[in-house]
Length: 139
Image (tube, rainbow, N blue to C red; front, side, top):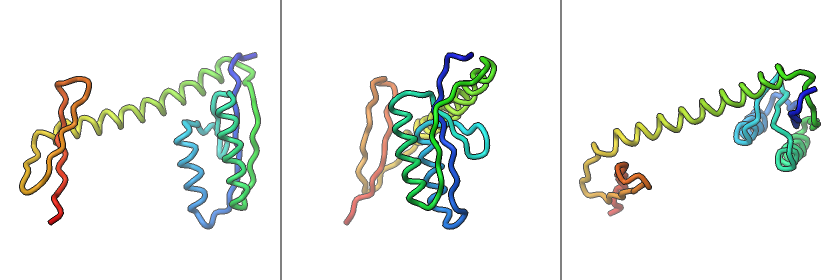
């Protein structure tokens, strides 16, 4: 038996309106949950993740849906390795997006020219990185 304990959320919401479904999906993404099958999401089990899923389940039910939260352990280390790999791949995607945004800011910063604007310089701990952001003056 595996040593990793997971907290799981399975839910169903009406198709219309779609806004609550999108809000739940965004919340799950913010929590860092991974989708393992249809509407079954997992997080490593601890008090914080259980509470987050319980609150989300209540919100789903308030929107006219159904939700179930439970704890589970897989029966094999291979399954845990697959789930951990999914978490790592999702984290890698998020970090790659952050790095891409930072690189874009680094490239744009030196090209900014100020004409009747206010320049704000942001200095990072690494003094070699300085970004200029231009905020137009309101006349």
